[in-house]
Image (cartoon, rainbow over the protein chains, first blue to last red):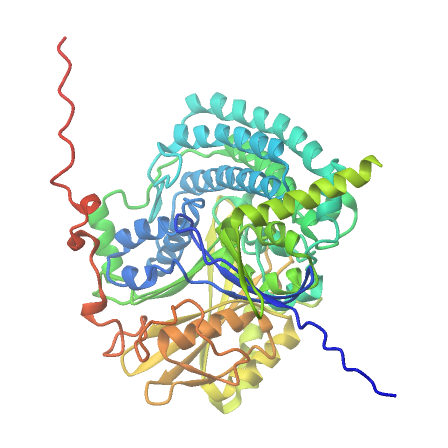
Length: 416
Length: 193
């Protein structure tokens, strides 16, 4: 008997990206897919690499600090505080205690705003647009509060090497407390919307899993690591600013559910828990806010002269909303500009985790898994489905539609 | 877990590096009203000792690799491998930095991805940005630089292989409307009282 060889189709190669130019770090994904399943993941970042380190090594330290602030539009304090802390350690500048507290308070408000922004994006990717509107509506309050305290909604420009540039005075406390009450209510609402919703659970439970061992080896940071049970948080591990003065707990999903699964749902839980934690931190630090000056060296010219004489190397770290940010700085005596400057942003550490998360999942799950580590969502701008004979390009809208359709299918199956 | 002090870690790593050990120092820094200290260990070793020293560090505690930082010092390129041990234990985390100096005539360094896979991003970046060859890297493609970026130009180097002046584009010099300050609309006329 003759056997007929049947050649199985070998699957498709899919590309997602590169990017929407307006966003920070666009990424292009190349995926090998078989039917609906993702077999292999590869990614190419760097579409918006601006050579910030190159620029920083040609400017004096104060200019570089403001340049660092502009690395990210969401984390307005993250990079400036990391760079400042590195420089302060080299030049042995002791920041006044009051300035440490203000740095921490603004850092926590930023975490609230970033996590709410993320919650909205995640809801949108699931086709749950009413939750997206709710999250972004709530977020406006913290943006207003940040503007009230620092003068700006983004790029607060509150950090200076050796302290902060603006004070928080007792007259402002009631307005802050008002916002904190607002967020407590909003937290209850958002927790109910995200965590008690059957559809959200069905889309996110068991989806995009990153196990503890994978997380340990791939070294992700922030909520991405903590949702996999990695207890890692710069605020607790390597306390800085005012975080060493208060008791903090690692926010892992088992605090709420009693178990760690490392899926997208756990990453939602982790971020919601962190919003609640941040509200507590802001209240605690405001109550403890000590008196004192804001800057170690108020005059920029004196500061620059001191930095010109400083030499050495140090690392400045900060727990940004997306995880640890670190800056390595080396100064040489007699030079205005840093001799070396390396920026490590949180997404830099989190990228590699996409590979185990996406492998084995469906195309319609790409948007929510890509969003679950809280990168710039722009990566899902455009998808090209490449087949041997033809080339089909999926736009972001189509990919989003696929995701929404999957949600609707799940909802329809629930009704039956 | 029996925690080692920074000095003990430095001694253990020095023993592991053997003859390739150069120097070590421990620093600390305190912030906040309570002045909680954070500890750092800085150890300088030759390239040959990188893998055995890292293996010793893994025995102490599986490290989280943050990034490989760099400095172009003229005749040499310094690589700073930043690791954290004792993460997950409140206030006990220690930053351990391995500094490896490479002569520009022989820019080769072994990969550490077989010990810590998470270092891949940083190793690929060092290859394209500094012209370092990471021996046995599992994925040696470019990461951040585009495919059409010229070969042999390494943006973070400060010598002739760095960015040449003709590749630098000043935004203000482009002549683009949004970058010119002289054609801004005139300020509003003050309102008559």
